[in-house]
Amino acid sequence: MPTGFRRTASQRLSGTALVVAPRRAGRGALGGAALALALVSGAAGGWLWRESRIAPDPVPPASSTEVRSQLDRIEQGRLALRLSEARGRELERQIDALNQQLAESQEQLAFFRKAREGKR
Image (cartoon, rainbow, N blue to C red; front, top):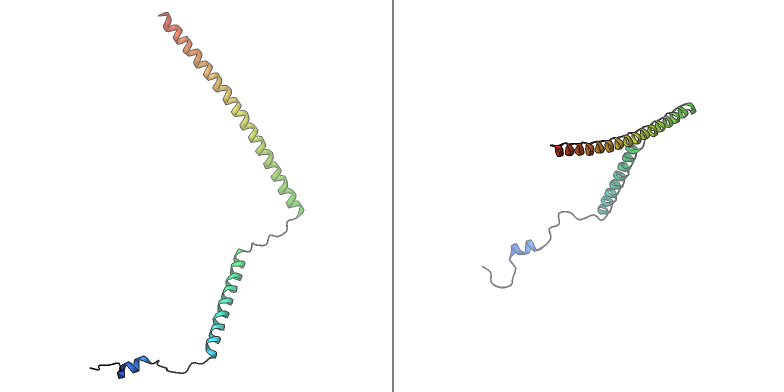
C-alpha cells in the first residue's frame, strides 16, 4: 500500500484523456450546417403543407342571373322575417289583453263569491 503523494499506475492511466482517433476540425461545422439545413427545410415544408390545407377552395364565378336570383331570395327571406316578427308582436299584444281580461274576470268572480257568502 503506497503511502505518500505519488500516483499509482492505475491513477496515472485514468487521469489522462483517452484519444481513440484525432478530431477533424471540419466535421463539426459540416454537421451543424446539415442540421440547420434539415431544420429550415422541415419548417418550410410544414408551413407549405399547412397553407395548402388551410387555403379555401376556389369558388367559380357566378353569373349575373344567379346573383340576382340569390339576392331576390335573400330579400324574400328578410320580408318573411319582418312579417313573422310583426305577427309575434301582435300575438304578444293579444296575449297581454287576454291576461288583463282574465285578471278582471277573476276579480269579478271573487267579488260575486264574497257577495254570495255575505247573503248566507
